[in-house]
Image (cartoon, rainbow, N blue to C red; front, side, top):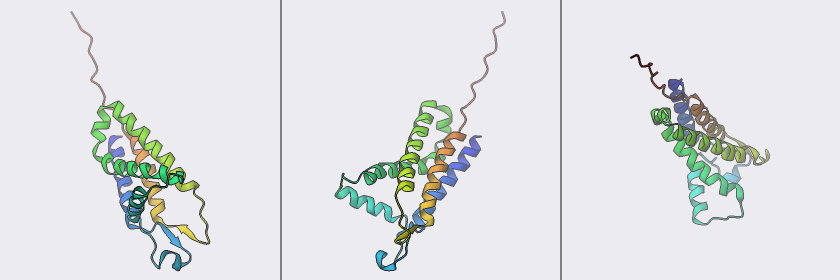
Length: 156
């Protein structure tokens, strides 16, 4: 099962990398985007601009910022930390909880944000980002703990 966990984590990492390279939104009117559709890596620029002048009145952006950073850290580190998660149940639980919260918050905000089909439609980058969140959470569910050696009864 742990090999399956590594494969699922790696697929999540690949989906996260694909998110950065693919189009996030397709605009119906090319004048809105200035002739270019936004790529996933541009999300980091938007987050940087938000951090420089935060508008705390916009709750989805305030929730998305730490969730996106946590998803990036989980996507990049999880494939390499499977042996650690196998040996430490507290770290495994921490990973499951953080991954689940990121999936609920970032995925929930992404899916709950109304999309006006007259302005834009989600691109493949959006679906890759959501797929990376789901795959990362599923990867944690495939991690199995290391079996402890059976104790043999003492014979006098």
